[in-house]
Image 1 (cartoon, rainbow over the protein chains, first blue to last red):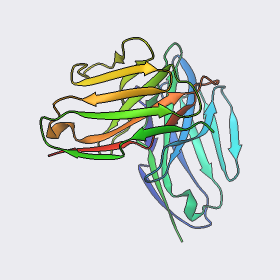
Image 2 (cartoon, one colour):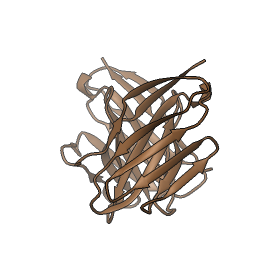
Image 3 (tube, each protein chain N blue to C red):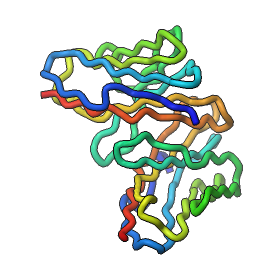
Length: 112
Length: 116
């Protein structure tokens, strides 16, 4: 994998259902993997920053896992609510670089 | 949490004019800020890294004379789109890292530029 790729690009989920989506990234020279939530007309907001293989992070109903050896991260949302509707971005930071490389995002819509 | 303010949120201008976009860190100092551009249905593409007191670092393919960046203070970076043309119409967004582990970034709300 040369770029940061997210799947699916869009997702519709019924309120109350749980869901998850994927971020794939180059595993070489890995430093950190970021997840951001971006609601319409607002600033992207950081959810998680993960640095260690096997990391699991949780914030309320949202959690994330990280596999740096195979280059993927999963974001899980349990019991989706309408306020979870947003675009979820992941970004990869490699060693020695300041910048982040972003995926295209997963646009999540929660249907009431 | 840290706040980054970006202005204007939307600008419509005539072809040939220059447009300045400001990015301010409101409650922390940012020696580095990032400027991104996003085309429809695409990812945030880094244009340049703005460094306080020194020249910006531009990504490959980004014209530095077209997209002028000034980072004159620890709380303000500006991006000027010079002689804007319709193909410069896009969504521009800035961010500033906080210096924490993993370099978490705080973003502005973005600027939608439409060049007629």
